[in-house]
Amino acid sequence: MADGRRHIGVAERRARLALRHRLAGTARAAAPEEVADSLVALHGTDPATVHLAVAARLADPAKAVPETERALYEDRTLVRMHGMRHTVFVVPAELTAVVHASTGLAVAARERAALLRDMASAGAPDAAWLAEVEEAVLAALARRGQATAAELAADEPRLREQFVYAAGKSYEGVHTVSTRLLRVLGVEGKVVRGRPLGSWTSNRFRWAPAPPHPELDVAEAQAGLLRRWLRACGPATEADLKWWTGWRVTEVRRALSAIGAHRVSLDEGPGYVAEGDADPVAAPEEPWAALLPALDPTAMAWQGRDWYLEPALRPLLFDRSGNVGPTVWWNGRVVGGWAQRADGEIVWRIPDDGVRREASAALAAEAGRLREALGATRVTPRFRTPLERELTA
Image 1 (cartoon, rainbow, N blue to C red):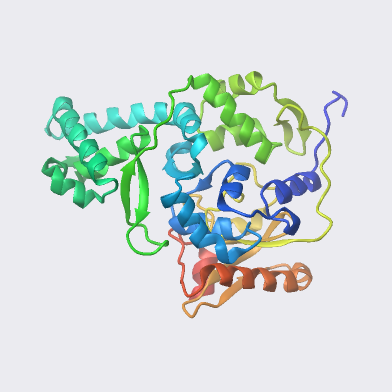
Image 2: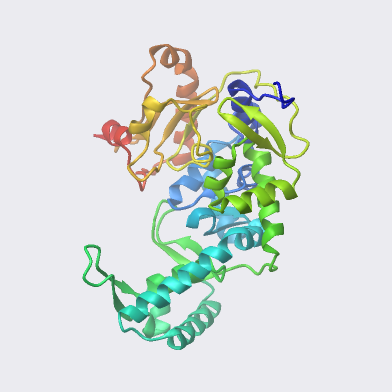
């Protein structure tokens, strides 16, 4: 390049993705903790995403569900918590303080202010009352170890208090204090989501006290998080970084400067890699395929996705809110989508005839690995997309 920056093309970006996201056969992990550490954070809004994202990256997919359950609910080496973009993630336990300081504090302040404002507008009890309820809830949770919202309301009946939200507007509704307060406490890092009610696919869950962690300096935490993310997902553009973190542009630029990020050239313009990470990365020797679940952290890692996702596939694979459905990958790019039918059959669709023929054997093997992870379980994504619905119709 005329300005001396090294250019990282699409082929190398796909090679980095294959290896660092544990998708190529030689890069697969032995445990869920290795997967989460490599990816920084796994999307946790849909519980099934976590287990299936792990399964796609483990050398032994049959271990995905029991080992992820162990990590989340027994050893607590992984923690499900609110994080970037006010989204629920599963992160390594040692990263909770970084996520909380870098992202959670600002979101938490807005969430608590919004709750108090909405309660005041509805004539509901004031901040002092809410503080009393909060103290009682945290004490009850400490006694129980983990509990559902209903169980906590049995200990603290004021959680059942209701108030009208947005009175007189088209989206008017009735909110319960328990729903809003527990969400605020989650973002504030005081509680985390615990073991689900029922199977690992259930969206109903218990609450648990958050693991203790030190209070970090915000700027230092942001620098630490960005360094880890660039190691996993770099190169990335400034827009990618702002989108994934949910930070202001000034915060992104401050963190980039703090970690000495190296500027490179990408097809879409300037990008960044972590310090010392500008050397070329070779592609895996063997071709690889993957069946990744809805909301998989690889598919959702970047705002600019044209280097791994054909624009023509977007309407099929994303819902109207921008949530990605189950995706089929071939050598570092999304080539189609998949679904599980009611009888357990794994089916997929790849529009490109050439890719479909080339990847057929590898995808059949990946479908077998997925069946090992699922066993008798049937999974329906929480956010359904046009192709997934069509395949299961």
